[in-house]
Amino acid sequence: MLQSLFLVSRPYLWIYTLGPYLLGIWIGIVVGDASFSSDAFLLLFLVTLPVNAFIYSLNDWCDEDTDASNPKKDFWESRVEVGDRSSVKGSVLFWFFILSISALYLDSLVQKLCLLWLVLVLTYNLHPWRFKGVPVLDHLLAFIYPMWGVIGYVTITHSLPTWLYLVPLCLFAFVMHQYSSIHDITFDKQAGLNTSAVWLGSVDRNLLLCLLLSLLLALSLVVIKLPALALVSLCYFLFFSFHYLQGEDGDSLKLYQYFVWGQYLAGLMLYILLDIFYV
Image 1 (cartoon, rainbow, N blue to C red):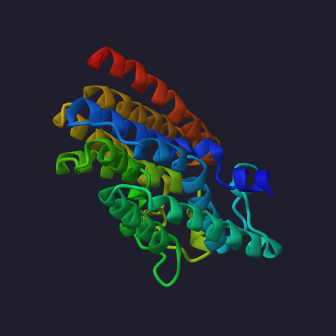
Image 2 (image 1 turned 90 degrees about the vertical axis):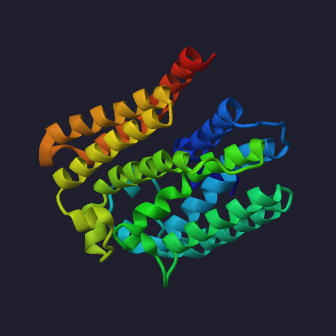
Image 3 (image 1 turned 135 degrees about the horizontal axis):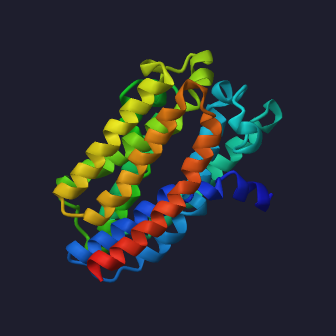
């Protein structure tokens, strides 16, 4: 039971919530008026197992149609079988309860942001909304991952960041979502799910958009004077360029796996560059 609760959270993807959260705290310390907050430690725990278990339990429960023939689910993620639906639904409700109780102990502004995050997660996945199947809206709701950067910042500054910081966060959400959707194009299309990636059509078109978004991301980070982050974001541009050069025959699933593990390398590079630029 405990093992299944752990595995459904996709531990190798925790970096998508934990990374932005820690970065938000760091930005709050460097450019904001930071002060100690015990909320930071509670949230540090929540953005690992609880948040991810809730996200991916809900995702697995809602995506039975798109996951049915997706090979990613055979060895990289999990597929919900007919007999598993009740246990997965139970997992969703369990983690929803844990997150709700935990939120009661947070600062009021952080509570409001967590509530907004919850609304985004639910409307992204659940019918009758299921905005993950609406082009452009699926990009906007992908903000559920970098939004933890905003929550991290607010946790120790007790104020919202300037709107300029939201631009690179949104671009980061867009580029991560767009690339992660490329492998799923065929299977989403078969299930009638019209994501932005399906709407664009070919892998090459999707990769060109990823290249454009990664350049805009780097530029936005230069504008707000975070050159270390801008340098790391250029690594995304190089990776997307490599995939583009592979053409339609490139193994998108294998490259997606490299992309996920590359987030850890990007995190290490960012840590080193932050030491160089700011310490």
